[in-house]
Length: 278
Image 1 (cartoon, rainbow, N blue to C red):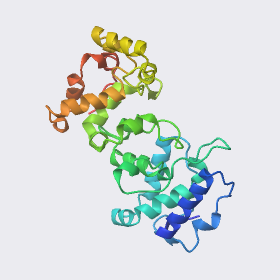
Image 2: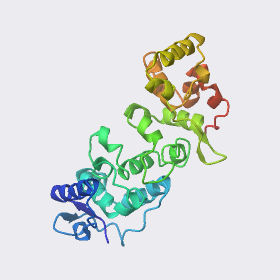
Image 3: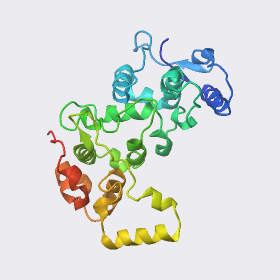
Image 4: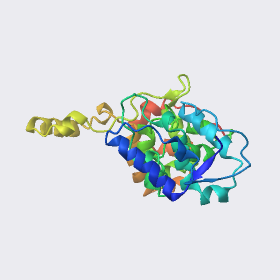
């Protein structure tokens, strides 16, 4: 099947189908929705039928970038909601949870919304957007976004959830390079372990007994920051980023300068950081 785009009615029908599944319905996917009266043809510039979507998120982003490259920016902007929602419908079995009886995720993972708070959660549109933004293979290129596009295309992932919601972070090339240098492990071609853990002890946070509160006060008094879960991890990076943002123009610094500003709790990641290309 060739690429098409939903009309608003097509978007509504697909969203209704997702909501039916989430309510427990066993309805099969309405294949006729993909090329029915609630779709429009997009471009003759894309030859041939659509191929299989790679399971790997990074490779899926690369595939989508290549697929949509012939479309003009104006065409993509005009039809973005219809295109991305239609693609999510076309590849629905490839991006919904793999477990047979699992319910679909929230509709915004499949229904495209131009507002950033929902846009970065779309399972296809955001990986494509990020790959296209950093598509250069030199310096600040696509290799620097593997941290964000790691894992299955079926899952948004904690790294994207914690970082991409902050548009100022994800669209800053020096910040993205600094994050990659800190948290990417080139030997395993994967993120370093433990980087998405919260910076507070979750057991103590949920246990509101006097004993737990006393233990937290003792931890603060000892200032044993490096022993806390998540010290130097992504949650802490976001908090420190906004603190530094009040004093420094982080967008005028390079990645190494940003890394040098981080406090000692980041040393365990900073000591083994990957070399930054130019």
